[in-house]
Each structure stands twice: as structure tokens, then as C-alpha cells.
Image (cartoon, rainbow, N blue to C red; front, top):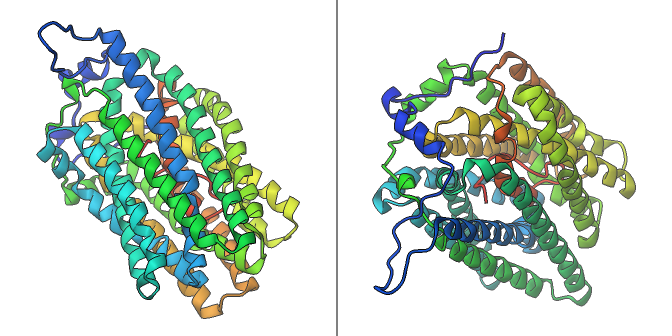
Length: 485
């Protein structure tokens, strides 16, 4: 028998959904925050405010995803271009995540101090944009390239992860429930296309630069464009209204209570599964880029096509999985995705034929789309809006810690065996074995079958979700962990 998923509740009174919160979350109109007007001016109609907010949310998502496509996805390639090895590349693109995730634990405190979700999200966006400019310093100061990359990447992830919990809580109060599904379905198309456009443009820019010996300038231009897009995204965020009911009341992040709740509740086995999958994925994930460029000697254009195929497959399959989730629920969909992602790393062992690799990438995009959507369904259904900021901040930290643990284990294995063709293949095979071993935890977990109205809310979070892994691995096109941009 399926039982309702019991998420951790460090303080039952503070995390329980109150009648007032229920009423607020079911409002069908977004009440705009007070707007200062001149004596002869009138306040805009609620419908006008809503249309303006929806346009700004779409623009923010598109600009954010261009940044991800042209900037974040090339972090690994940038580190390799600085002359660092495969192990250094894997660690410098994974270790900053856990540091950034630790910094984003200040989100509940920062939101309380600013008394505004919007102000906190805009601040995080500005920090993330500035970190991309700081990343360029690694080219100018070669002797301190590794520390500068580490610092810039840490700030990047702190800004991205720090904005996600607050944005999810805020946007729920802006977009009326009765238009949410249709709006996010349309918005998802813009964000997916924006990521693909940014990624393809970056790949061919690097290919052009490599042919002319100006790759350093191409990386500088790409990161500058990415930073400009994120600054513009911050402006779009600042232009959106913040309904009175969205104003932050201040959540306290109680680590012991949250951890104990995860361990006791039915969510414990689910969280254990998610963490185990992340360890297995990142055991090999950060080392795909070094394998592609150093062992297979593929060009930037080839790399762009490989990852681009995954994007296209994900975009095609996501709507289909949304309808499938309405029939089999989040548990069934997560099983589909969990089984599907098992072989995609190990399949790299059987052939280096480029067309074969394109087929693997198409399969990877399709399977990760199911896994990612199922994850978002669970989170949006199970976590009350009043506690979402704290719970997601805590989960982000645990998620990042699991990723770094996997990257450290993979890096240690690669360092012991030496960076050569067969060593990389061993990492890929062990990664698939780890994903299979983790599947047993999923079969023991149980939670409530979700209402279909949540099915497309995940589209708001799949940018990142998760373009986080795109910078480090090829087979996992999207991971469920970041700001719903």
C-alpha cells in the first residue's frame, strides 16, 4: 500500500500548512505589492500586473538559460584549456558546488534580513553574474588559475543554488494556479531553446577560435555574454511584483531536526536513493569532458553536437512524460527514469563510433527527462510553501555533498590508475553499477501519487536543474537540484 511521503518537520507548528497558507496558495489572482504612484496616476489593473509579471518570468528564464548554455556548460572545457589535467578538471567543477551549497544555507537568514524573496533572488543573480567575470581572471593570472577558478565557481553555485528555494516560494504566489500549467508548458519551450542556442553558439565559437588560435579570447567573450545575460535576468526579476502574501516571515533552518525527520519519515529511503544516485553519477560525470577531448580527440563542434542531441531528446520527451505522470504518478515515473539512467554511462564502453555516441546521447536525454520530472513532482507536492525555502536549502547542501563525494571517489580512482583510455572506461562502468545498486532503495520508498497540476511546474526548474551537470558530464543532461530559473 502506498503511503504519503512524510517530509522532515523540525518544528511541527512552523512547517505545518496553516489555514491561512492554504488559502493563500489557492488564490487565483496575484495581488501586486504596493506601487508608488503620482497623484494623477492610477494603479495598474491586476490583469496588467499579471501580464507584465508573466512576460518578465519568461524573459528571465530565457536569459538565464542562455547563460547556462554559453557559459556554465563550458566550465570543464575552460579548465582544460588552462592546461590542467582530467582529475583537476573534475575536482574544480565539482568541489565548488558543495562550498556554494554551504553558502546558500544562509538563504533563510538573508531573506529574513531583507524581508523580501525578490530582493534576495535579485542579489543572488547579481552575485552569479559577477562570478562569471571573475572567472576570466584565471587567464590573466596563470600562476593562480586554480584558486581563481575555485573561487569564481563557488560564488557561481552559491548564487544559483541560493536563489532557487526563494524563487520557488515567491513565484508560486505570483502565478495564479489556474494558468500555471499552461504558462509553464509554454515557458519551458523558450528556456529549452535558449539553452540549446547558447550551447550551440558557444561550441561553434570555440571551434572557430581553435582554428585561428584565439580560444582564450573566445572563452572571454562567451563568459562576458553569459554575465550580461544574467545581469539582464536580474533586471527582469527586479521588475516583477511581490504579492503581500509572499513577503518573507523568516524560516529558521534547524539542521538536526531536518536530518532527523529525513531519517525517521518515509522520505528517508527516497532521499537515500537520490543521494546514492548522485554519488554514482558524479563518480564518472566530471570526467566525461576530459575523456572526450583528451582520449577521443573530438573537436568542440563534435562535443556541441553530442550534448545538443541530448537537449533535443529531452525537449521532445518532456511533454510525453508529463502526460505519463498523470497516469502512473511520480513513483512510477521515477522508476522509469531510475531504470533508464542505469546503462547510459556504461554504454560508452562498447564503441567510440561517433554515430553510436550520438545514439547514446539521445537515450540519455530521454531517460534523464523522466528522472528530472519525477523529482520535481515529488518536491512540489510534498513540501509546504511555508517551509520550502529551508527544506530545499538543506536538500541542496546534501545533494551537493553527494556529488562531491562521487567526484572525489572517481578522481581518486583515476589518479591511482592513471589518466588513460581504460581508466576512464572503468569509471563509466562502475557508475552504471552504482546506479543499479541504488535502485533497491527506490523500490522500498513510497509516497503519495501526485495531482497532475504539478506536472509542468517542474519545467520552471529544469533549466538548471539542471544544467548543473552539463558542465561536467555528457550523459546526464539534467539534474534536479537548482534554481527554477
